[in-house]
Amino acid sequence: MTAIALEHLANHALLGIDLEVEHGELLALVGPSGAGKSTLLHAIAGLVPYCGTVRFDGRPVDRLQPHERQVGMVFQDLFLFPHLTVRSNVGLAMKHLGLAKKTLADRTLDLLTRFGLDRLADRRPNALSGGEKQRVALARAVASAPRLLLLDEPLSSLDVKTAKTLRREIHCFQRELDITTLLVTHNLEEAAELGDRIGVIQDGELVRTGMPQDLPAAVQGF
Amino acid sequence: MHRLFALPLILLALLVLGVVVALFLPLTPAGALRAMTSAETLFALRLSLVTSLAATAVAVVLGVPSGYVLARRSFPGKTILDTFLDLPLVMTPLIAGVGLLFLFGRDGLGDLLSGWGIHVLFTPLGAVLAQAFIAAPIVTRSSRAAFESLSPRYEWAGQTLGLRPSQVFLQVTLPMARQGILSGTVLAWARAVGEFGATLMVAGATRFRTETLPMAVYLNIMSGEVEVALSAALILLGTGFALVLLLKAMATRPAPATERPSS
Image 1: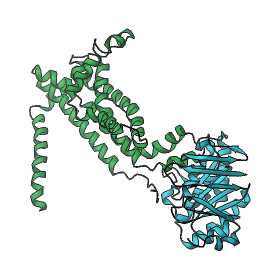
Image 2: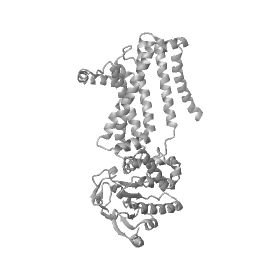
Image 3: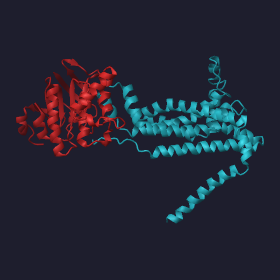
Image 4: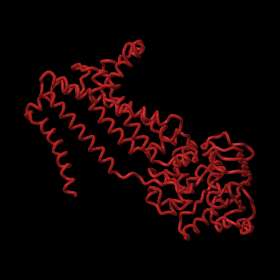
């Protein structure tokens, strides 16, 4: 279980976040722009300072550096490395695992195939479509088998059709890999479709959590 | 309008051309070849290459990390420190040389370094020091600009992949900023090759000892050996031209497209 209890974040009005995510669960966080959803994910990943406690399986990770937290993240603007090929973008996440060269190459190829990227392995990110870039970002985020996956508006920059396709894919791989996931989105339909539970953040506070079917009532007013 | 503005451009180009031609004119092809292959010119060329490359290496080792810290960190007095680091760029090289002369002289660090067998003043090492002093701010500035143009979120992305900060720097930040850093390095090298004032003060102008190309020009003009002086000058000009051309070629090469944060 992942437990997050944050009091406040430096330079940000994020207050009173207290939530728990079960192993393998996908919790979708919704809320208006500026509510602090992305900042919450950055805090959990250890990328911004915060006051409070983040626990993975009961153990606090607050003193751990971002690279030690075993958190995978897809950023809103992806930040794929433009100087690396798709293969290297994904493989980079496994380099620190100390795998043999052959194992690393095989695992990278398996992952690329899983995300339908094997044909694009030697391309650079700037030669990919929006949906392909998104797949690379997802593959890269899960490559090192993180304990927690953080998805920050992963589909917001895609056209409706591509977003729907990728939504299905996220649903499948999240179940398949059984990976605990926090998804931040402003798209209520996306949250309802992907989330096992929904959390509503407003003015820096987690105001309620509930089941997807409760979403319409929960989000009234924003 | 364009024709009117073209006039100053033509005048400037003619002035530069006039200077280059004036340097060529006193030389006959046979005389230039003889002077360029003379032992003194070859020594100066070799020493210039060695000292300028060493100085550029020092400038990169000091300038790149400094540029990174200035680009990524905020701290009290940062503007003052930044301005301070730029001083060698605006300081007359002669004054920089006098400062280094006192700093590494007997009343400064000279005795201490001599105790360790390191002799800076009036040695080729002094030339490296003087050239590095002038070149380092160029690398610092260009590195800082290159790092600043890169969203720190690429580094965040690297960290969430499990890479240590040093790995993120070497595998993400440095390769992505390399074009800007390389441009600065080439410019710093060009500046180091042509450095005269500070080198004269720190390393002196001793034939076949601290005689870099600019020093060869100076020594031979002073002693009336015009052919050797001008040949050394032409080698310097050619080197400078080639380095600036390289810089322009690097500037026109497109860098990989990066994503900017939307929020």
